[in-house]
Amino acid sequence: MAGFLLDTSVLLALGVEDHVHNALAERWLVGVAERFATCPLTQLGFLRIVKQLRRDLSIHQIGRVLQSICSDRRHFFIPADIDVRSADWRLTLGHQQITDAYLAGLGRQHRLKLRRCAEITCADCAGLSFACKAHKVEHSRTM
Image (cartoon, rainbow, N blue to C red; front, side, top):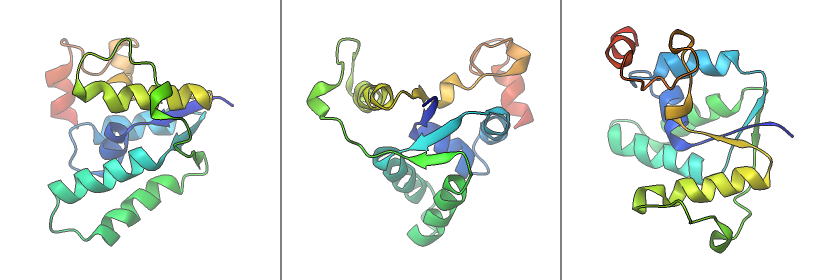
């Protein structure tokens, strides 16, 4: 199976309309032919962060946004079925990379590429990350 495991940052960009990378994430997803997965960690991260940012929304409303993302015909769910102790910690430098290391291992287990928001590409940048210094200001103005 080929495809992507979306991390929480991509779910946030897709699900929060006023997110700075919403339009770019939506264009990326429309252009992707492969299937994409979510897992309990990424779904829970989405719910938790959106609830922190948007206290005016109920968890049910936020859940409906997540459901709309997951209703895409290319979406599938994978369980968090690897032992945390089996993650590759060699390149983990700090606490903010712990979940990424686990998700990368989970993606490998399911033959998926972990896709973080920073890895969504922009055609204008010829395959470079949208966070490239040359276009960062331009991208933030157009989103």
